[in-house]
Image 1 (tube, rainbow, N blue to C red):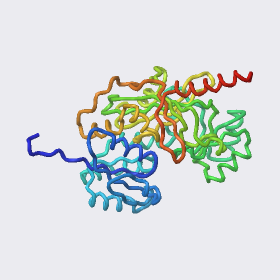
Image 2: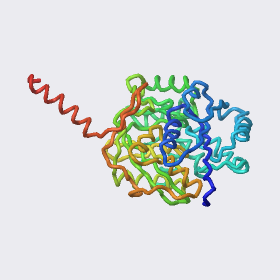
Image 3: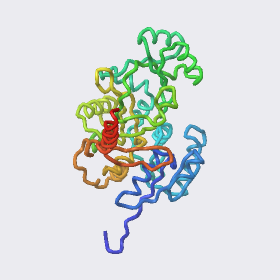
Image 4: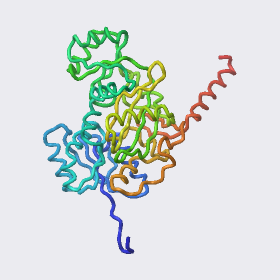
Length: 368
């Protein structure tokens, strides 16, 4: 670059701006080594008020017929260089529209569309994993009441109901009651849109990764200690991680990579594999959040691994920042503690254990 040349600031259009998942992406870019001009858009007018972006625009829901027309209008007006979204419906919509976006000069860095379509449908994902021999919870698609009755007979005892699409535990319900399960599906008008699976344990982990042309660039594991507000739902699942902790486990690393590669042998972009431990202590893949980061990815950024920035650099074929190792580069035991209406806190698990230890010592004084 010559003396008088200035490096242009990349213009990034972010969908879902103002919502927690996209705010983490935006904040990660703000904390990266280079400046960005960030354009926020969302279909939620209230979330838009919370978007810390340079511009803010309201758009229709991604499934509405004028979504693409309004999106193009905003693109022509704001001239973004790159587009990233943070929910499944919009990932699917943008994935289908990527070629048109490229003609408008807007980059995306997504897995191929076939992979996106598979992963946003939990039932299709399960079938592929099962056919390829991965260890997964037995799962049945429920089209009719007879399917539901058969599922209870086959799985026995307690079963797990959940919608085939959507995030944040949408439609999730553990139950031992056939009648309750039937009423639950009726409430969601969910026949043909729900699965029944055997119940696993409450222990869950996520393995978030970025790939380019089939090469793994970086991945980091994280376990969830508990769901925030779990006592306010029937399922105990809210989709809101209370405290997450960094982990490094070769078993998880291997299972997560296999879960991805049987769906796409040459993955591209972001793949986050959710796993739940079975009663034998083996993590079973349950879904892949594709083309987007999990909600609390700002955790990794604050801990020293800025995955949104890495994604941007890869999309523009630029050198990425140095990473100490490809898999689980962050120190295990870092904790990200969250709550409502409060800034998350980055700490260490041993600090939390010290709090518990202090209480136990006080109890001993009184013979408790």
